[in-house]
Image 1: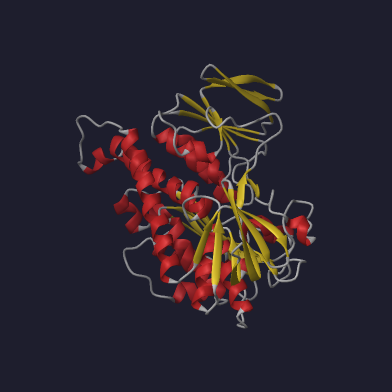
Image 2: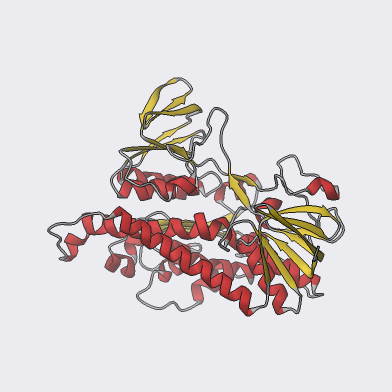
Length: 463
C-alpha cells in the first residue's frame, strides 16, 4: 500500500482546518488535509454561516420591499416571493466559496484527501472513502473536526419535519407555523428568515431570557424588536418532546398544552464532533463536556497531536477557530503566536444585528469590577436616519479607574461590521478616551460608537 507522508496532516477542512493548512503551507510545511464532505469549507461554509447569511440577506430585502420601501417612494404593484430562486442563490454563493477554497489548496500545494479520518496511532491516520481506504502519515497531526447540532432528550430529528439548522436552510416551502427550540444565535437568525418570508414563528426557550451570555440590556431590547417583527417567544419553557406524523408536528412542553405546527427547528447549541475519530488509539480522553483537552499551545496529551476550534471548547465561532489554527501552526514553525480570547467578538445577524466583544455589565458586576458606561442610541445618528434603521444602541463599558475599554455591545444597523473597530481598540488596550478622540467620518454609523465612548465620561454631543 502506498502511504503518503506529510509534515502536517489536518483533519477537517472547516474555517479552522483549511486556514491552518494554508498558513502551514505558506510557512513551508508539506501539508495534507482530510475532509469527509465532497466540498471544502466545513459546516460554516457549506451548511452554516454562509448559507444562513445569504438567506438572511435575501429575506431582509424581501421584507424591506414589502413593508418599508414605500416610505422612500419606491412602490411595488405585484411583489412576489420566488423561494426556489432564493434558495438557488444561496447555493450558488456556497458553491462559489467552496470552489475558492479548492483553488487556494491548489495554489498552496496542499494535498486534499476525501474520506472519514480515524487516528490509528502516532503519526498515522486512516482515510475511508466509500469502500476504499488509505493510510496517511504526518509528523504532526491537527484535529479540526468542528461540531454538529446538539439535540434534546425526547427529540429525534428526522431530517424533514423535525430538523436542525441544516434542514432549515432548505425548506422547500415556507412553513405555515415554525416552532424554534432555542433562542440563541441560530434559532433567532433562522427564525427571522422564515418569519420574514411569511411563517408564523414561535420560539421556545428554557431560560427566562433570549441570547444567554449576551449583555442583558442589549438582549432585552432586541427581544422587544423581534416581537415587533412578529416573533412569538415563550420563555422559561421546558420542551419534553416533539413528534411528526402526516406532515404535521406536535411539540410537547412541561406544564403547557402541546403546540401544533408543521415544522420544528431544534437550535439548542452544538456539540464537538469527535465520534469515531479514534482518539482512544492515542490515549486521548475527552473532558467532562466532551471536548478535547489541550495546553496553551493546542497540544493534546498525545505527542505530536494538536486540536483547535469547536472540538476544544470556548466560543463555537469560525473566526475563533481560524485564529487558533494560525496560532497553532505558527508555533509549530517556531514563531511566537497567541490568541487574544478577550477580543473575540460574536455577532447575531438578525435585523438589526447584535454584536458583542469583551465583558458584559453582568460579568463586571459579578466580578466586583468598577466600571463606567456610555450608551448612544442610533435614532440620534444621521447615517442611521438616512438608512431608515434607527432602532438600537451602541454601548461602551470602561474601567472606572484606568478608562480601559472592557466591553462593547451594539444593537443596530451593521453592528457586525462596527464591532471590529471595538475589537481592534481593545486588542491595543485603548481607553474610551482614545476611541472618543479618534476622528470618525461623517455621516457614518461608526459615529454612534464614538458617541458611546464620549458618553462614558458624560460628553456625548448628539443626545
